[in-house]
Image 1 (cartoon, helix red, strand yellow):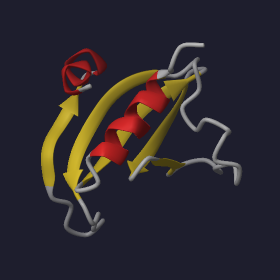
Image 2 (spheres, helix red, strand yellow; image 1 turned 135 degrees about the vertical axis):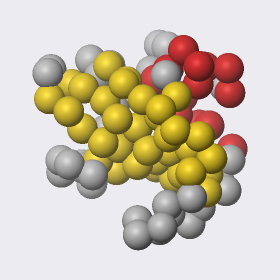
Image 3 (cartoon, one colour; image 1 turned 90 degrees about the vertical axis):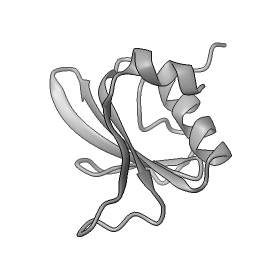
Length: 94
């Protein structure tokens, strides 16, 4: 079984605990934003399953952009390392 994009982002974030990833994506023509920190994902616009084995970023998701921020995340004063990275660009970090 191959690793989906969400799992790859979670692996990256667990290896870089000083970063928070903010992922903008589209699933079935609906927009969503997912925050990933220390290997765990949480949707900011939908409910997130309690079971960590249920992927937040499904295989049907189209990743639009990824923002890299410093941890801890402060919504009132986010500290961006990079913004609007495409999936193709982010693959270089993996």
